[in-house]
Amino acid sequence: MNPTTQVRPLDVPQAILQRRSIKTFKTDPIAPELLKQLVDLTVAAPSSFNIQDWQIILIQDEAQKAALAAAAWNQQQIIQAPVTFVFAADPHAGEQDLTPIYEQAITTGAWNEGTVNYFKNAIPQFQSVLGDKRREYAIKDAVIAATHLVLAAESLGLSTCFMNGWIEEQVKQVIGAADPDLAIALLVPVGYAAEPRLNPGRLPLSHKVSVDKIGQPYQG
Ligand SMILES: Cc1cc2nc3c(=O)[nH]c(=O)nc-3n(C[C@H](O)[C@H](O)[C@H](O)COP(=O)(O)O)c2cc1C
Image 1 (cartoon, protein in one colour):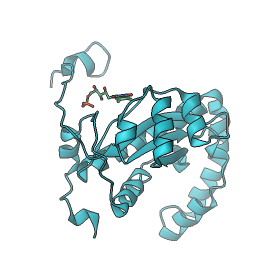
Image 2: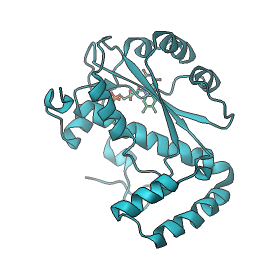
Image 3: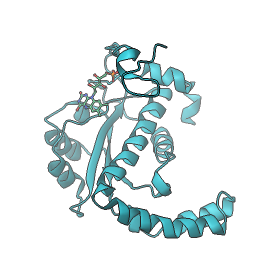
Image 4: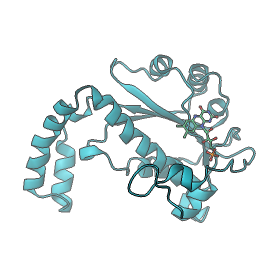
């Protein structure tokens, strides 16, 4: 069955407003086609120079879930949810062979030879200028991908929780990360909510949004 026929997807504003960080999940599985749709929508996220500097690991195996939960202060969402996405950020992704992207972009007409040559020069240049900031930049891209996942999941009838509460070295051990420079950006359990949660609210816009300069509050 096509998962999109099971629920009418929410539009983006509805998904944004309805999303809550869910703390308890049913153990109900996610249909494989729906999970594939979520993965496709996640990696549709943009990234700096389109280098897609994330590694996404789907934790589904019960023993892996238990190990991941142990690395995340025993947060039970990881045990309950049928899948947890681990978003790892690869500071060396700029050095990977991007030929498949160049070929795709030429085939679709999105980029011409000039654009491809620009990227071939600019990516290593930018990476060397970034230096130690490569980790931070990779994390930015991974978090943008995680945000795509969270909103897509909400739109398609699922729930999520962004999670920052874990010990990086332990998470890396669970996913079998060999590269010492690989960073963990976020964990996101995905599944069906066991209980709804209310919106805890946000600070007034005037506290958090300025016009032109900080301290000139946006009045809405
Ligand atoms: C980056 C990030 C990390 C978070 N880490 C956790 C976490 O480890 N465990 C948890 O239960 N909730 C976590 N949360 C959920 C927040 O507590 C929640 O987003 C906040 O209370 C606002 O609630 P709402 O998401 O329902 O609007 C995290 C949220 C974000 C954005």
